[in-house]
Length: 88
Image (cartoon, rainbow, N blue to C red; front, side, top):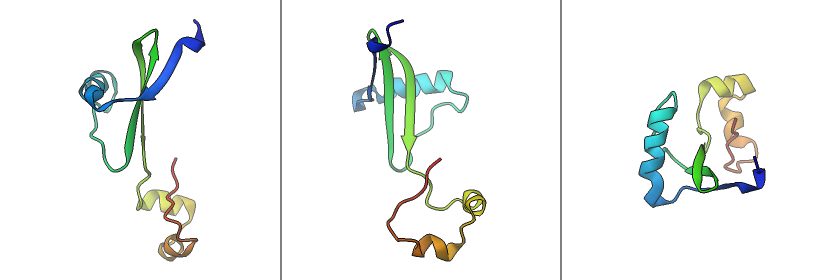
């Protein structure tokens, strides 16, 4: 396999229905809607879709994650206040 033949690019709006159909058919969670800031990518090999990728912004509030990190409410809003939210 020639790895240089693999390309990755964002899914275009006209391809979103096809992307969702593939996710519904092949992903254990099925097709999930875009929630918040989300971008979908596809990987192609010689013009054929071979992989789907999805990236989303982390949730601003997630109690389980915040407790695991050790954050308390006040720290979240006073530690730099840069608007950044950690991701997995």
